[in-house]
Image 1 (cartoon, rainbow, N blue to C red):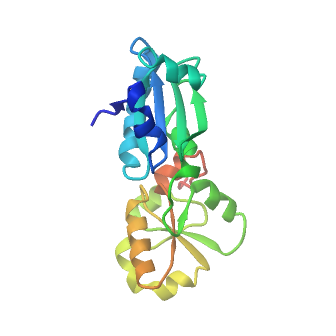
Image 2: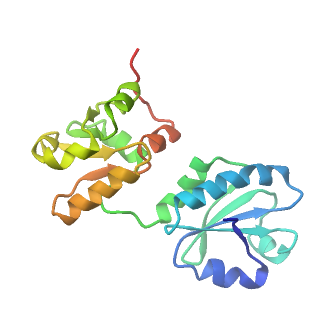
Length: 212
């Protein structure tokens, strides 16, 4: 679904009064970098559906808003939270960078650990990433210090899981491990999970172990 282009008269309701954080893509029809960047924004909008809002503003049709926010070039992305601009990035940037701008302002699931947070935790003893993918995927690439425990087996191996110290579940995208962590939490067994999974870890530029 295409991102909504917000006119000046809609800006207050669509952006300033939004309960969710809003990423506003300031663009122009003549701007080629804007067109090149749009698929990245649309993909992130699908990924964060229900957690953040994404709209576009045409600077040639909404000059007053562009001037108020001192948007001097396009593309420019501005994040709004609770009616205030809280972060911005000029120029064409990748999806991972836009996610970084939004992350501090999005609601987080209980037990969620960001890739950068896990990288810091792994410098201390007692934290163990748990790869929940199939054995073949684990063999090709996995997080440092991780152990393999397939998703379907975890609920029957909880004692083993907790002998790992502080386990952090992860899968390819983070979706399945998040779902399992939420189920375990409802059963009174809190377990952390890696936001974005292995893909999010790699997008953050963090080390992945691969067999020689």
